[in-house]
Image (cartoon, rainbow, N blue to C red):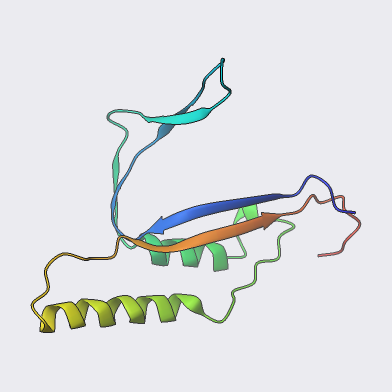
Length: 118
């Protein structure tokens, strides 16, 4: 049986402003909320491609003891779909409707001492 494994999901935005957040836990209810830290924003460009390239880079220190598998080259399909949508909306005179959340990254982390080899 595998114990102590985690799943982390993250929305991947292609552009915009990325802010830092402070974690707040309500002592009475135990509910967790996050508050944006003012003045912490930074501009993000090509966030989706940067994230994909980060995951594929095997030389990163945080990827030690990691096996990262890219499934079906979804990045190319996602970028083509977004470009097709942009062209369709422009040709038909439709305003708005731009895509900001390009994808959701799912990371499954298993402990290193689970008896499995890399």
